[in-house]
Image 1 (cartoon, helix red, strand yellow):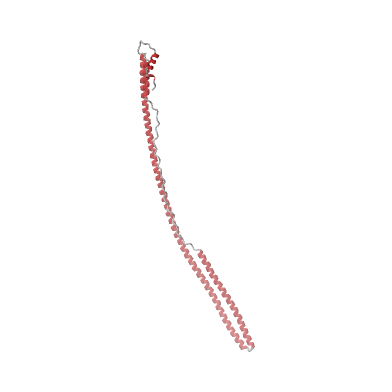
Image 2 (image 1 turned 180 degrees about the vertical axis):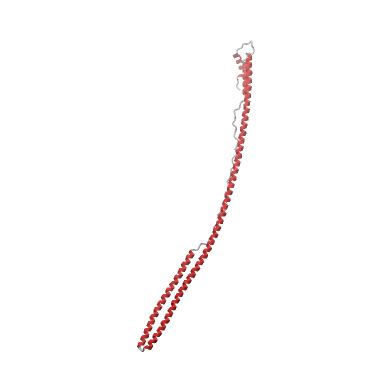
Length: 296
């Protein structure tokens, strides 16, 4: 009986030691897993930080490249606009010079036309006045002839009446000539006025058709590069915490096995002649402070 009990004690101690070894192996495996998880978390953090750094630098460079591209495009548009303004000014200046030349020519034509009209009118008036002089001369000759005839053919009172009648007829004819000449002079003056008025109207139309002197438009404002934004670097990513596993006590299984073994040994009746009962021995062991009943 004592042999079987001793074997049970040995088995308990060995089982405790085996349990301690298993706990130690489990703890080692858990530590290895935590170490590998921490290394993995560190690799992830390093990769993330490297990517964020490159992305931040790429974002800055892309902004600068785009700003330079927009500035170059704006400068091309600015220079093209300036060239267009210059060409437009040259074209307008040429048109203005041609307009000035045409206007001056037209004003000259108006002067010539008015002068020709006045000349023709003056020639016509001179002809009328010359005809009037000829007519007056003819009438004067006619008057002298009629007076001479009256004086030669008659005498006394009859002659005087004949002379007076002839002079009266000449007077009436001269009055008609004077009225006709005055009318022609007035009509000529009116036609001269119409010529001057027509020239004034023609000159006014020329002046109204004149182009305004072209002026060079001011240059548009120079393009500028916008101010660079305030860049905020991304925060550094810290590695995550590896999950903490359950720590297995190595000592507890061994102590438990030893305690169970010692407790079992305390129950063995080592004196074969002594048939002391089990309860009494257990009570004595407990009272002596045997650790077999303690939990570790």
